Image (cartoon, rainbow, N blue to C red; front, side):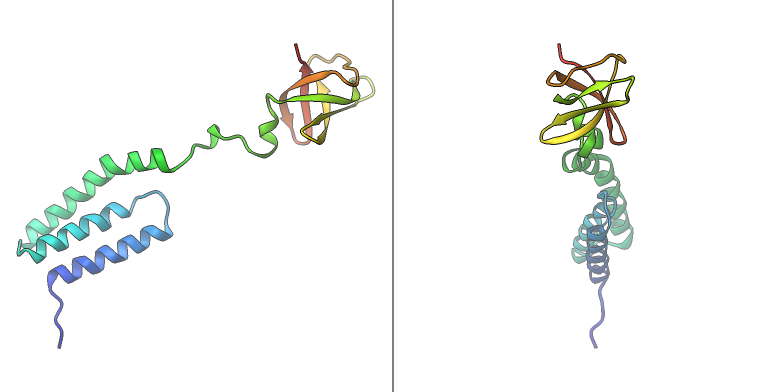
Length: 148
């Protein structure tokens, strides 16, 4: 009958931890899997359990302190760096397709082929055909000002 050596247990733990990292996010478990692989190597070389545990602990801490922050910085994106969907309209230039009249509550702006309900930031009337800049968005209504 096949009997498992200590390094087998470390390798099993390492594989399971790496597989667990594949189904989770954030590189939190990967360091433990790598540290377990180094502990398996230590066990294979004949080092005692104390050394194996020490290598596992130090390897895990080193990974979490030095490698994980760098990996997160380069492999994840910050949400505030990328504007998506309608939020990408802010700062864009559009053309008034229907006169913006605060009194009549009418007005539309064409931006990249899409037509948006628009209001004037200053509360003034903006005539059809004038180029405007989008300042903000509230649901389906954009707030604009005349482009200077």
